[in-house]
Image (cartoon, rainbow, N blue to C red):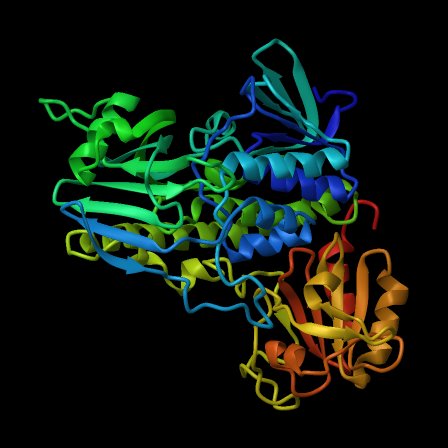
Length: 533
């Protein structure tokens, strides 16, 4: 029997970056959300080294990117050693620069615990706090709600539950969702936060030799803290030795030649086994999975946390519309339809990158910079969802990839990430950006050219509570002037065109200016079929 009155609309299990991003996105949309975590205290983990450029765009939309940039640092040059001597320096991001359509050209180094602190502070601004010491041990699904049993004997009822509870996800296991893939027991790494004296903190130091490696990267925001990564020490039988200060000192001396007593502290010790796994489903009725609960990857490329952040940003607006009665529950099916292929693609990419690194470090001068590619230093595998049922381009016909009436289609496709561009406010003349227009819990209708003015007015009248209509060189009172042409260039616009941007800043619809009805049709199809429609 379903509980008479569920306690909350959405319950999030797990308060890592994925769960916190989702909670922040839901809270700003006025969704009644709770977030729980089994840990008695907030962890000081530094597992992930920071957000990539696409994740920085998400953090900007949530209003916290300035805090993240201030707390972190730019990626550091890498110094590679062989036989204890420096053999090569590499700066994979040395030549990259921000562009009009991509304001963040490189990742940001920040300890995961510090990023989580920033997100918790943002969540608290909405009146929501993480409930520690709340371990989910039971899951009972009803027709219209879910009851989560806790280890302390209490229970929480919710309309929807999202498992963001890591690679060993109890929520996933309670659902019976399979986690296909492999664990490479022969590919292990020990990690920790350490203090080492006498090293240049402007460098990510990487020692490689024939039988192992040690990598030391300065932790931003600390005076003497370093991320330590190494192949495990093994005993006489070949079994890995549990990580400890003593074993880390021995590894330091063995692979770097530095005296072990240069390391005075080692904390947050862990052993990492290369896992490459993904769930076969992201949704089972009223329960969904996100982040490491849905997929785990090789550490190569640093895409694990970042893919989870994109999961949360994709899911947040959809879940909010459904719980508000603005959209049918079927909208949640598009979460899996869009994100599961990305997870599969990322799984293959990170496996390939790991092989590349393992081959590269066998050669003098080879190192992690070999996997800093356009995919990882830029937007990663989260460029878009052109295959999605939520992606529509009315310029295209069933028989031709391009409608001859509108000319060749250039620029991003429907489903792709919506580019940024600097513009001027048409009323005040003040500089602004498209990302500033997109920021917040709404769809954005961009109207390029004066021919879109009528469609902009109609969209505002019909969907004003859901949509922000903004003209780009569309005439007085309609928003933005594209004085340098960056917006038209970024969107490949040659004729007057309508572009509907989803709340997660992906393009939902591209239509010619005269097809204003396509905007209403799209929104009615996406959000007009809810219980209250």
